[in-house]
Length: 149
Image 1 (cartoon, one colour):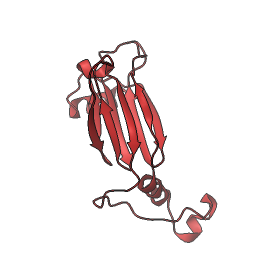
Image 2 (spheres, one colour):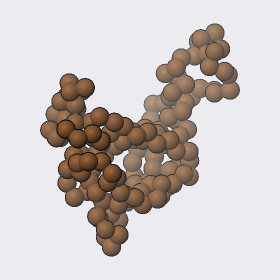
Image 3 (cartoon, one colour):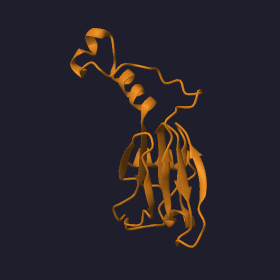
């Protein structure tokens, strides 16, 4: 919706953000994502916003061609990366998802051995289960504009 786009575009200082889709990537510890470009959208001047949840990961970003040496960044729970300008079409990768949540994370520990239907009987909540998933995996949400304006 335009209201959400306006609010987050303003908060992120990205007035050109007109997000209409998101890609959700799910990673287990030690998973990888090879170098690639996100360059299939109609308008590559529009930013790509990536939100990291859960386990930390090494994120590498290079240049618009493979000759530029990439830099590595450690992304942790709650980090946001914005690819805009020249970085919008840069090669990037996740060469490693780490298997330990940083000590600063306040995620609670829950057992996932019980079927969802019995959660309420045991006083468990969807939020608690989601916290467990975030504690032991990595979820990345990549928000972008796909459609032409």
